[in-house]
Length: 94
Image 1: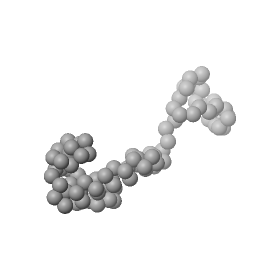
Image 2: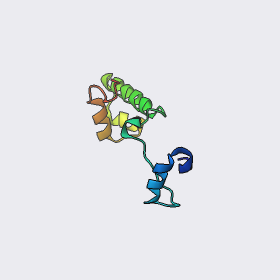
Image 3: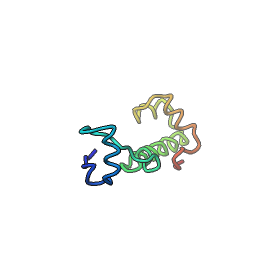
Image 4: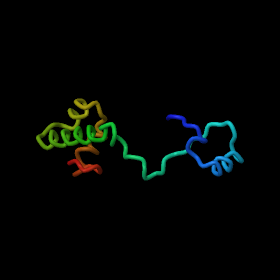
């Protein structure tokens, strides 16, 4: 998280109003909720998990046992069941 000087970005009137509540302290101003991306959307993590899940579903359909998938992917049997018994993921992969 980078820091910027409030005087450099805020109008003087707003800065004076904020100074009524906080002086000489660091405050965090969060992004609006709509500015946040979904988990993994920037890093590619979501895409990687979706592809892994699709691979697991295909292997299961070809007859691979749930216990073997759990071992192959280092997941619990219950997690594998949730993945393979879900028709499509919430994120668009199948």
